[in-house]
Image (cartoon, rainbow, N blue to C red):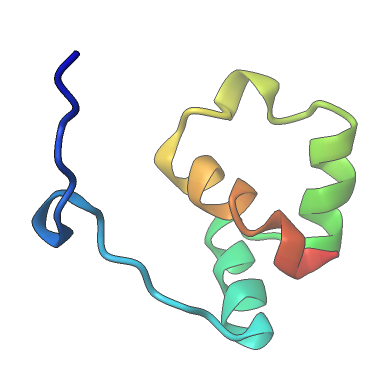
Length: 65
């Protein structure tokens, strides 16, 4: 079995955000982090979960809690 060797060029750039920077990204959707979390839990973003803006913000859910 061949294993693909991973190197830094194959990995995406990672940026560490402060909680304040993370919360600011929620504004891309025009809502607060608290509102996004509430709507996410209710399933309001199920049909839009693969949209880049929604996906980027969904990955930040730990920062909004």
